[in-house]
Image (tube, rainbow over all chains, first blue to last red; front, side, top):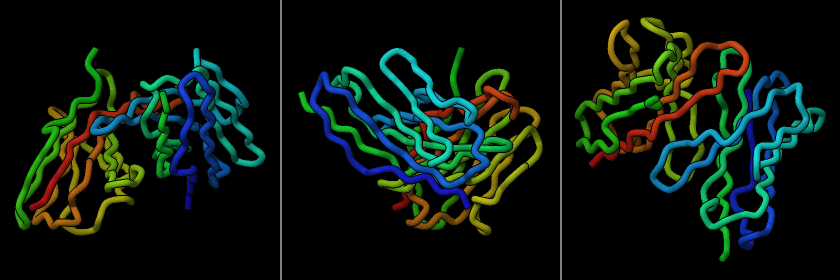
Length: 110
Length: 115
């Protein structure tokens, strides 16, 4: 079945760049997503990328996709304390049943 | 333009009671998905519904859990005879259709606590 893996924890200093990595197994994935979850809140869709793309940039966010290695990354430039949250990598194919990773907790140190 | 609305935000039940979780999709969305998030874990797919139809319930426990999305009104996730292990956050998502460029948008979830 589908599997999505990501590291559990990342700590960066305010103003530095953060890079969160993710690997997935489903070669038929159509869409790959990054969601942000703050404590006690729902999931906020940050960005998503189609599997036929290798990069997408949206303001401070850059998504890189290596389809050959099934590797996805999210880079947050100039990380702020408000970026502290759990970031979920996710993938879907077909009718969009989404498979989530376990989340990476980003801690931003002032 | 309201997003996905879930209620209640928090629900407390005693073992053996029933829990009903409601989800109103975004305006114009006809596809609804339910996910469960156990503490310190990611979200796990439970069920995918369109109006009056269950499309995929492969993630639903075989007993006590049911879901519906009637022609009128919100989607309902129903858990009968709740047990402690049902304590989790239940998220609903909706999408417009299954075509390209149609990501799922999530509600804020219902946090279910079983005493």
